[in-house]
Length: 90
Image 1 (cartoon, rainbow, N blue to C red):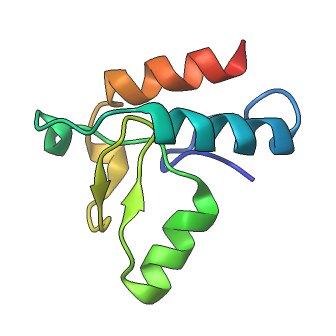
Image 2: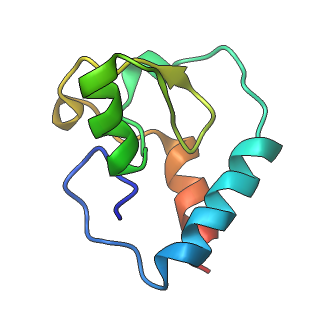
Image 3: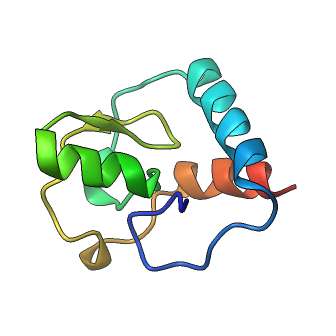
């Protein structure tokens, strides 16, 4: 399991722990309007694949929900996703 839409290194620690922490953080996070379209976002790779096949929207670590369609390598990483990811790694 990876939690990235970008080609970053795999997270440290067990994936079961990260999955549980991710679900809790997503449930606790508030979705707000903002500059989400200017960034690439961290999303579980399996969700990206599912979205590509079904068209189902995904939810990023920051709470943004959308259907991916652009190359994430062309945008800087969302600072909110990065903050959440760093909290998960601790």
